[in-house]
Length: 485
Image 1 (cartoon, rainbow, N blue to C red):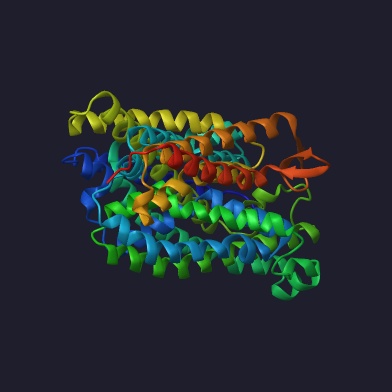
Image 2: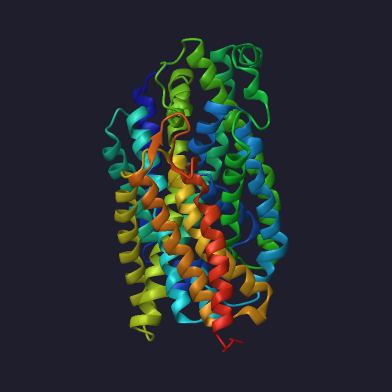
């Protein structure tokens, strides 16, 4: 118990080799750009279930949920994870059908149709930044450090590099197939992990006896504002580039709707088990079963290393790798598409062939990976990085996309351009400002700055930038006299 054995390394090596093999197998099987980027628009409900769940449950969620569960308890599920299910329901019944009615390939496609090329380019930059695989690479660094004993940068390069290889070669079909494998791995991992962790700490009774009562308070000790901020990041689902990609790749609207409804139950179960496992890690620390200096976002890994026997630990590590590779590949592919389809083709070469688009998409994938690596080494904790990326996407695209979809008379070029542009710029400027001039609080694990005698957290920025985007939209609407059909 508590150490990686030879059999664990064999299991991990076989899994990683298999992922690369999938990418190489699909490398020469693409007939055109639609096939490479959207799997020929042929995804059925079962494939959508596996790729949606795998994509949204990478190490960022695995460790983000567990970080909050470790420090605050069940609020990680009730206050952080649960609100996202409501947004998935909204997407299933109010959004997906409208998006399926038109022949879009990407989020910027929507902005182009409603507001024109300038807004398309702002949306493409926004989608590209949001899709940078920084969270995934951050998680690989943590995984390599805690379990494999590597320096974080080595984990990012080696593990992230493997995911990069099969994404570059295989395209969206490779992503979908590996997501299906990874979905199974995720389920096996949780089935294995739960009983071993409970056995290590002495069961639920020990958890109740050891933890403070606030750990079982549905809202915990977090401030109402912070809970609202965490819940609001779920708004990103309504404009999420990888989610849109799967809607456009689906065989029909019914396939998307059914996949989302089934997925909500699986997501809920997954989040709950992660929360309980993180709380069991806290028990392990308090009882001296785990080191006292365990970082909150590494707690889940630490208790698994301590609890799982040889073989089971290898499956767990492979499962954790699978959750993150399924996220990294999806986001890198979307970012590559932003470069090739949303910027290169309309701005530089409207008559680009499918071969040229696929080649440029691969260049974009590489660019996104390296920029994501740079961002991953710049942040001190994962939850803050996630809030930063979510705020960029929400602040710049939520207003123009939703108003454009539901109120056609609002589709005026300056309205979309001002809204998207001001939302993007204000989010970047305010985040940089607070990270330079603010103070990092190791307790709340966020930056804060005092404005007018009040502590302003980095997570609060979205409540400034969304109104800025909304004001920009209506200012542009008022100035623009020419609408779009």
